[in-house]
Amino acid sequence: MSAESPYLETQQAILAAALDEVSFSGWSPACLEQAIDSAGVDAGTALLALPNGVSDLISLFSAQGDESMLAALPDAEGLKIRERITEAVMVRLQADADYRDAARRAAAWLSVPGRQKQAAQQLFETAHLMWRWAGDTATDYNYYSKRTILSGVIATTRIVWFDDDSAELAKTRAFLDRRIENVMQFEKVKGKLTKAAEKIQTDGSGFSEALDKLAQWRFRAANK
Image (cartoon, rainbow, N blue to C red; front, side, top):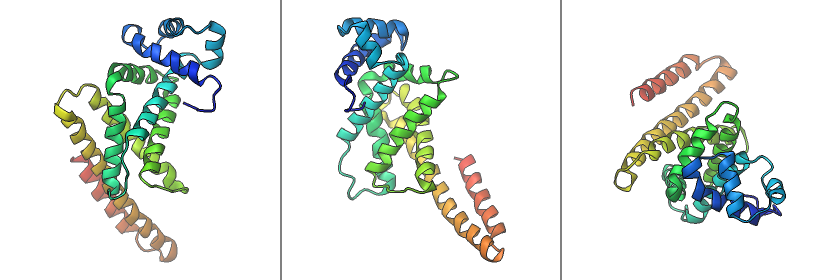
């Protein structure tokens, strides 16, 4: 949620009311209408605060979870990158712990054709905030690759979390650990591929080495 919005309080009031309603009618125009009424907001002001209706409401829900995550994350000092990302993903899930059904329904709403762009944007923003907290300052192509890869990790881990009734979310954490291991292996291979590519550009060598490293990573990932 943008603190610069003149309708911030109105948006927050409608979202709070919607979270009480969404389990009954989902993220729908009916839910939004009921939330606006429950929040005591007039229709004109609601339209100005949420011009895109349910779409804006779900974006607000995602942003609220991101803000809660940042507020709950500890000091990253002393943690390895792998530990930082694991911590960030688990804390982000916990930020929605009281609204798991709402999060599940939001994911279903965003999966409808035509809404994937919004889903990708929200995931990318969450991943960006995680990487910034973790200390990443990349501005080159790694900026996008890191956030895109982490977006996929967040999305797939969230699916497991939706139905995880294990103690202390053990199933979710185990799944997340495996996905992050895949990412770490990819990063290692990517570094080797980059060096091999430099060899190819300078003296033509390194091509077979690059193919070999990529094949090894693909085999390990497929047999996880």
